Image (tube, rainbow, N blue to C red; front, side, top):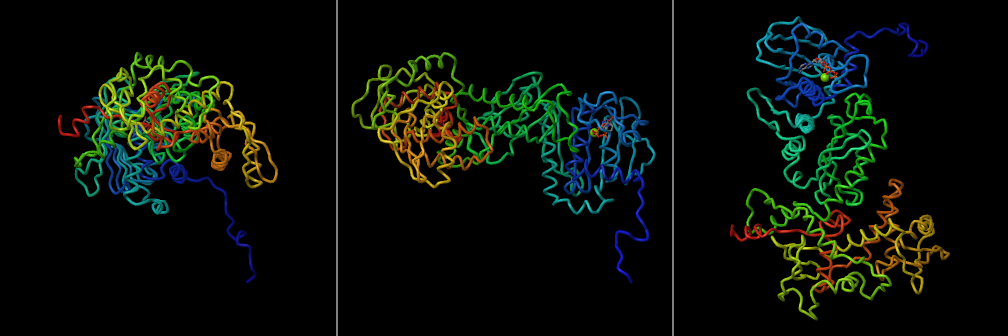
Length: 635
Ligand SMILES: Nc1ncnc2c1ncn2[C@@H]1O[C@H](COP(=O)(O)OP(=O)(O)OP(=O)(O)O)[C@@H](O)[C@H]1O
Ligand SMILES: [Mg+2]
């Protein structure tokens, strides 16, 4: 038998129209890829129907049963077959496919579900009689009368029974149940005025409630705050800043957590566009940009943010699951997020998160209470009066002209500038034990320094409690903020070295450094080629005083390595500045006098972002008197 080309067989393939069932299954593969996507479609339909209360039940990870019950507007008996037909929707008209105000708009979801499972819809509109319709493997049964008090129940059994190939790709019941929970939680965040109940009814009966939220009250922000507290957690809600900003027809609202409440992965990033949960690269990138300055690269901000705009400004029909969007002006969306979040973070000033104090107290408690660390409330944002007093205490400008670095860089300059305003220096006072005179600064947010312990922690008394400051972390942040301030004016002031320092490097490293020499010189670091793979450091940032130029150069090289090409110019510069700042910081182990400590506290109060160091760790924790009393069982 001659070898024949298998592609040219006797029965040549014919091109033919797929039947409707096949078309439906293909489309369904996109719309419904796993139980969670079916749940998403059904819950969205319930929300679109104006439901106030939505109950979701599933069995075996949603593989054998998904049932969504709502108290929405219902579907009329005669419209039931239509609801199951492709491209039949009540939500948009043909004239303007961009004018979308509902989750649904394609008229695809129900027919797709009907093609991949056994689907029954039971519904009732107002006082009319209830009715139900079933579809199995794409074939519809006649409408039947059914008893139901109001709203709609959609039941989907045996998902993918007709397409075993798909069944194989499903994960364990647990993983599918987890995905369902995630979908329901995201939608519940988007709809705080709607009550949601999620039940696992595997094995029959009432099942087990795995998630429940009641409808929230109040204005949108209150409702959202309450809902987020219930879903992400009260700690998130306590540490979240309210965001409300608009620009050119785009509005951004929601809550973003302080950097000290960051996470090790992006699990707590919830983004919504016109109420629709999305996982959009552009928006996630913008978040990174906004927090860039406050978090190290392995920490992720926690946010729940909603972008609302005229539906014409955003295309939601770019992804079968509608989870990606396309803004008409992507730069505008990005800019709005970055500027609104940065602004809010700056406003929050030196606030560090309550998580920190909570964890501290938890660690101090003599015996675990069993309820996890108790919640402690961080200081509120200082009153305007307090802030003004603190600003007044800051004047004149920090860096005195003609200031000469001393052999003890860092806090030396504090005493020069502040000696007139703070308590007289107690000469050679022993650290840590002596009683310091009561000072009038206790009313300020970070209070009056009382002692330094272990050469790194400042203990200060405030009106309502006490504060413990990590002096190294705090100073690092302050130096960084001052460097940035100088940078944004006319570049960081440089200090010439008497003898240039020669740093030996590899040829490659040398070339990489010199490639950014111009940027570095704006940061106060002047480098020149020295030949043979070495660079000469001629100037260093004056603010830092005496530095180990070699260590700084190597650190900058590391930063350049880490960055790759990924960051924007501004972000690159800030990252380098942040590294540079570390070199000027007071290392732990430096003893400080009372006036130096107080000066540090005052500067922290007046400096934005001083509640966390450059790596997102807190610079201080506050304990309220009432919490201290609780520790001793006094309350
Ligand atoms: N729970 C419900 N309550 C009331 N009406 C519903 C409900 N679910 C579906 N419908 C009606 O059935 C129609 C078809 O629903 P389906 O989900 O298939 O399409 P859609 O929501 O219009 O668009 P999409 O495919 O984008 O979801 C809807 O337009 C709506 O009129
Ligand atoms: Mg729909």
